[in-house]
Image (cartoon, rainbow, N blue to C red):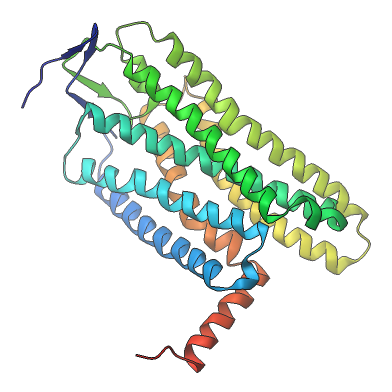
Amino acid sequence: MNLDLTENRNISIPSYFYISGFSGIPHMRYYYIFLFFVYIISLLGNSCLMLVIIMDRNLHIPKYIAVFNLSLTDICESTAVIPQLLDMFLFGNQLIPYGLCLCNMFSVFVFTSAQSLTLAVLSFDRLVAICLPLRYHMIVTHRSMLVIIGVMWAVALLIVIMATVFISRLSFCRVIVIINSFYCDHGPLYRSACSSNVPSSVIANLSPILILGFPAFFIIFSYTCIAVTLFRITTPQDRKRATKTCTAHLIVVAIFYVPITFTYALFSIVNTNTRIINLSLTSALPPMLNPIIYTFKTEEFIISLKKLFKRRIIFPSPK
């Protein structure tokens, strides 16, 4: 095992990073087993959701393009976090090579950012559907939704690529760098460098605002407008239907944003174990709960699922 620092254009690159994970908490294996079952449920739920959307033409509408994208990011995010976490802490593989560490940071950040932005896209869909129902089909089209999602991915990729490039320009003075997190977290990683980390520090301060702050603000704004519109609806049935849909989305939003906002806002006073638990649950629980709360509670999706199920039973595919 080569543990020497690699010199590349005056940049000292360690061969390995050591992911410290939790410290001093007994019976952590049960928590990792819990995360394993969460991961399996996430894969099954989101795969089922995506399969139904693909197979039922009635769901080939702009709203379900965003829902499909949310399921895709959920699968990718949980896959980027949980298998690596289990491998490190259940099997003791906490030494990660430099290149793999940067890849791990890149993938986790990209898919977390995409999930946050997709929740904002879904709130935009609800905003137009409830506040501007007569113009909905002119504003929210297949083309406009694809453009919005494309821009969303471009923004997420641009920010994370910049963060990764700045990290790759840092020098580390230790042979093995210890990262106090459950993955190659950007903050603990750049703060471990012994060279100037100003660009990485700027990205670390700006990215939560761009990736978490703006989407959260837009979601709050959207549902404020939706609440005002709902009070103006005179038909109780319409108000109940709209409230049910929006409540499901708000639960998903709260599950994602509350723990991560709590962690960033109280970073200086929250201990490492609490921060790791909050962030790991933020990476694990929303992908599992999103298809259950948001889509499987949607009436049109349930109807499509029942149609597909009956079609397979009454007219089974030939063997």
